[in-house]
Length: 440
Image (cartoon, rainbow, N blue to C red; front, side):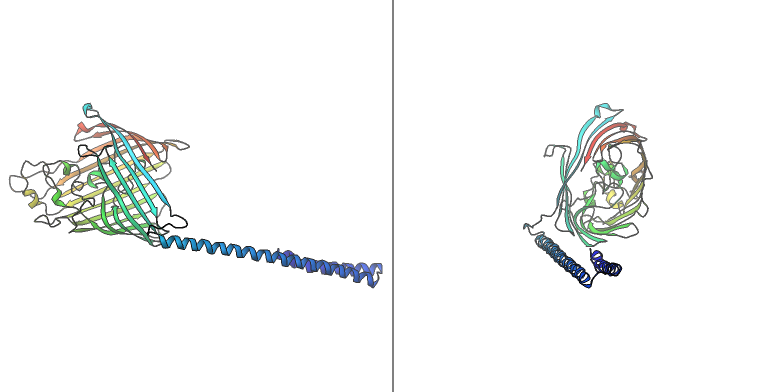
């Protein structure tokens, strides 16, 4: 617009020169020339008036926009000032409801009488953002459909923490949170993993879903590295029951506390690294360690668990591998107190690994068919501390499980699963599984 108006005087000058030329050519009188000049001057004055009017309108528009911006900033400031006080802000912060769950069918091929169907879990999640830097995350889980004193169901708070962004690359989290370990523990929705049941390495060695109460720092770098480190509650070795097989199924799962009146005389520390510097590639590791006596036993053993994990998604492929290892120190005196007939002494070492490959065989719109295969090798009693003479226990053999099946996605949020699992040591556990899962 301004360039257009700058050209007006130039156009007027050119027109004037043209008029002079025409006047001389046609021998026009001076009165005629003056009349033309007065006419041009009047037109220029009219154009100047229009320019002034347009500038005035533009100034009013800018003033209105500035006032609107100031009003929005004031509203945002008011919302932040009442966050967390229970007061209502002019624009309410975002509250999001989430959920995931699964219904599974298991048919042991060599023991059909043990076939069962189960609402394995149903979870309701809640996320509330107090302001642009602070949020609350909660997850509330029900297992096996019915929870009462006479039923096998369980109700639990799976997560309940507040996270605050200290810096674009640094946040702090406090409360009950999932321990950053492996591929599954923090991403355990049924749409996020292959197979009807969660893999054995990340349930028997890493007791997913494993949560602790404490504080955690979370940082990111421009090179694709995410790091997490913190202090939390740990294990309570006095919960070990040598007469039960729970410890055989998962040594750490039988002594973790889930922030349920957790003994906290001894705390633990943890750290994790995940690198995503190349698209489609994840490489990471995690470590958790701490004393577990809690002042309740004569000895104060140290429990340590660590893992290495990786995932690569080139094209239609999805490849993953995890190795996890754990140890419990000073178990000799504790095991010596157990009777020789007790089925489950405390192991000194336990570990496991798996490799997995999946492929997107067919897709159409939201529909996706992804067959997969997984091989696992794990041992929940790899070694024991020295027993008194006559009470020795030999290590358990490694169980090896091969799983083949497929995930069929009706949408990214709904999956139907089917697989077959073959056990090398205990073939009675061979089974065919079906599952329905959701996550939103």
